[in-house]
Image (tube, rainbow, N blue to C red):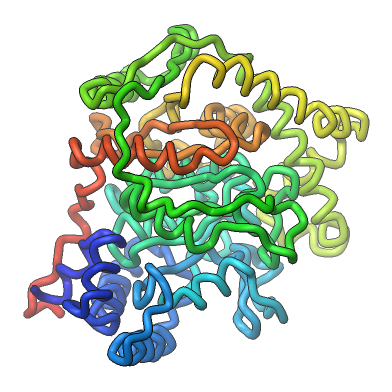
Length: 480
């Protein structure tokens, strides 16, 4: 096989090939670096590319395997992460001009776990400024473009992570999800994205957006890939008091269980009143595929998602305002107009409203789990209600109603952050404009293994996850 073909393997496939020494880590890393060199000028999905360091690490990984040492399931596999996960001595911009030269003196726990597991870091990925824009626009480092069509957005805020994985420049990427920032770009770029249970993965030493709803997530091409990476980075961390001391299962080993009889909840028809008919058609077809595997669907009543979205948004804005209070007074003009407007709103929300939203969270979650998951095992919901918009259609600096734009993109994802539930975005087709769409599976707290298993079964009978954007056709030997 030529180098270009290697980048088209899934993470699980390339990990097994490296483990069996059928492919070297250097070969896999070189394939990714070739793809980055070819596509970065068009996609702008990386802020920092660390080619020399990656190749050195790959050589070490190969040497260790030759001596019989394998650090873990990701040994020798090239990955990347959103530019908000700190590493000692390396610039971490958070997609913001204010942090353009920020060099942390700490390393994120999840980055350490990837390093300890033998993964190869390729660099830092583009993102929305301060993780505060679900469209993925970035005026400071340039917009990241959707590999399926360069005139369309990627979604955000993990824009670079989704584009990089979809374009076969890395096998997986770490992102963050506060209101949909993993699932939305995953859906818009045609990859899988897991937002785990709140507290499942450490957030120690990453740039915060809103501490009550932030979650670290994984973007990869398949549910199996997401399961493998989540298994490496998840687990209790003394450096993050919000992480739960709950054992991390072998997610990959649990993928093969039967899905026959699993109860899938579907909201009432009114829930879909504003969903694009083409998106709804893809959702319905995914349910037919799951039904053919033995899963059963049931209509379930859901609480008002719009209310949950408003409450979650209020928490995010208040906490973001607190985080940015000092910079907002000293570096006001260094924020983009859009991010500035979102932060400013947080200063005008009464403390009583914020405290009430936080205090009621446990009760609302308990009611939701009892009423919904007392009837079904998982929920099947849209991720985004619309076809992927163009940059012109979603330009927040030109749009007249920014809150409406944000609401329309995150209306089905943001409520899940407030509840702290796990949710997995799974590609399920394309809309007439040629851009991907997806469904999300939502489960009880710490039910990630069930979500992975159901999505994996779906992906054994469909091929949406294997389709690559035309922009990243495998390179021939003469092109490398």
